[in-house]
Picture 1: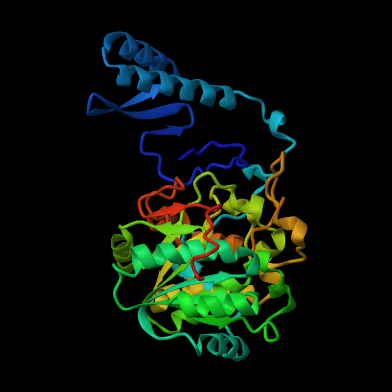
Picture 2: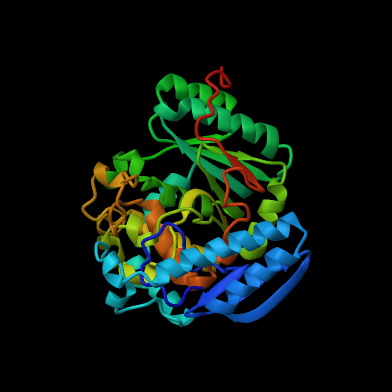
Length: 396
């Protein structure tokens, strides 16, 4: 882990374990795989240069030479960064020198914070979620998703994948589809063909900002409602998720660990995609989270345990029902995170931002243990993400 980093506004996290090398100040511990043998040694910047050259000249392996060249490029890049004056980064306000608070090192304190009354569902909240869960059939595993009329074709394609891959392999499961605005004809076709339970979001009973479907404030509430009927676990997926035949292994992994989340590889750091008001609601300083990338919330597995429900799902759902938490003065313009200049609070990811804060606060630097394998690619070990795939006739 980088301990001397002066600038954290990159899209890559420094909190994840670095298996191949770790840089600490001006001393570097390098671990390279050379012809199947691992070598570790303490090196300075300058004798490391000699090490690269000798390895390159003495080895006949193209792979080794490629590794050596790659390592040299990495070293040069780091040294250029290291010796760049701090004033070069003054255009960015997210330098850790300005940070007065860090994530607590006490797991007990972090858990107590997430169990606080402010993040606990009240009777009115529970009544709303119970109303939504009333029509959900009880089962061991509940798969859940949501759709609206403009994503109807993508949903048909995703359901076809479920019918083909998941239904034959997963026993004692139910599939719940939340209707966020299907037409009457689409609803009828879905109920007839999807082999699922279609439920409706009671827009008259939820805060008005739930009508902005792109805010995804409905997602934590849907997952919590499904958890009330799940005996083992809840699997949430967006319409872009296509399962592979390793689905049973994935569910087993979620059962053993209690949680599977889509890691934030290639994502912005959490404060970049989260408004300050959300941090304020949790009593957190944004700069304390600069080492951690945001999670994606398009696929998750949550096990039915008091720990997962009380420390993750309940605070997530409570935040979704509080405008000052999930949507602090936000507008549609805050959704756009594709901007040429990266700076903290430049956009907001709503459900994704909140889940990132909760899980990072709960697990701190060990959050990566709950990342699903293969989440560094859209074609991973368990799923394939295809946001453009459609099947307009599957429900006909």
